[in-house]
Structure formats: C-alpha cells, structure tokens
Length: 261
Image 1 (cartoon, rainbow, N blue to C red):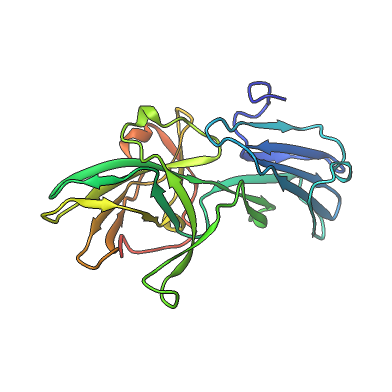
Image 2 (cartoon, rainbow, N blue to C red; image 1 turned 90 degrees about the vertical axis):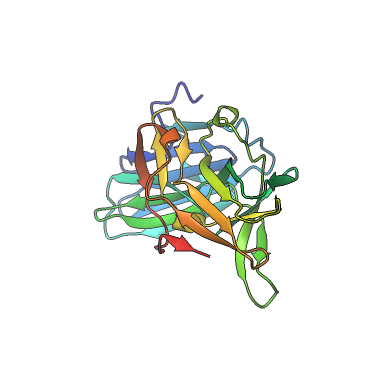
C-alpha cells in the first residue's frame, strides 16, 4: 500500500482495532505491527539498516497478516485487565540531546548572525486507554551514541547526527521521519566563528505539524560564550513563522527554563 493509497493522511493519530485484528505500519526504516486481544496488546517491530532518509516514505495496512506470521525481530506482549479498542500513535523527538555536525566547514562572520535549518530523527510513542498509558517508545531509526563534554568524566550521553545546514527552507524536503529546527547563531565576538558541532536540546522542544506537511520544533537561538565550546541557548515558545499554520503533536519530554547553557 503506497502513501497515496493509505486511508490515513499521516502515520500518527488514533487507530481503532477489533479484537484479534492486526495492523501494520512501514515508516521509513521501521516496520511496526500491533494486534489487539481481549487482555493484551501485542507489538512487533524491526528496522531496515539501509535506507535513504531523503526519500523515506510510509504506509499503513489495516488488514495485515496475523502478527505471529510477520516474524519481526522484536515481539512484545503488554497485559491489561481489558484492552481499549483505541491505539494512539504519537510522533516525538529524541530522548537525548542531538549533536549535529555540518557536513562542510561552517563559519559565522564576526559580530554577525546566521540562520540554518537542521533536522532531527523522530521517535514514536504507542499509547492506549484514557487517560493514555504508554505502551512503547522507540526511534524510527536510532542514531549512534556520542559523548558531549569537556572530558570523559564531565558531560552527557547524546545522539550523533550530520547536517547539510541548509540556509533556505526551499532546500529542505518535507520528511515523515524528521523534524526541522530553525537555528539562529549570533556571533558577538570580533572574530569569525567556526561551527564544528551543535548541541541541539531536542528533549526540551515541542513537536509541531504545519499545514504544508513539514514537522517543526521551536526556533533555537545560540549565542557562543567566551568558554570554549559553550553557548547560551534560548528556545522559543512557538514554532517559527515559516511553519505557517501549525498544531502541536507532542510536548517536550523535559521542562526547562527559557535560557540554558
């Protein structure tokens, strides 16, 4: 089933299942299936290692083969006294900061400001019941781990990514598996600034869907400090104006002050 043939306009939302019904999603590299029984939800998934994030697509099959016949790599059973027929699929941002490196050298002029667009991979939450109970929280594809900090003893575990650091939104293709962040870098120093990597605080960002199909986070503004490798970070409370009309898909995983370092 192709994206245009799917009955769903998005891979997320609320899905209602009859007893013993299996449904299946293919979202970029992730294959995901869910089956409802009287007292349990069965969840199965696996990922394809080789895929092109620039052309990633998705499909949904409401009449999939029984989940036991799919032979996916991971199979889980989630037990309830009685299952609710509604399953909620919620896109979310990663659960750790994302260290993204420009593919080519990137400089911001002395006392200048630059705006770039970077993207982050998406996670997927499965919820059921009222109030919602989380069944699973997993990445569509899992970025590699990396360490960010001044030493091996001080810092934090993050995810690693690479970015084209696009300057024009027209060059950023809409993607069902990535979210766009508008990053503003204000260089207040008298010398040009080499941007080697950005620590994007995605657990503190909300996720939005705009009416043109793009997924967005709020704008992140970074002002480098005199401490090497450090910057003051400010997060807007709404998506940028480039997001046009938008709605919230998921709230931040963590709460923070408006400014952080």
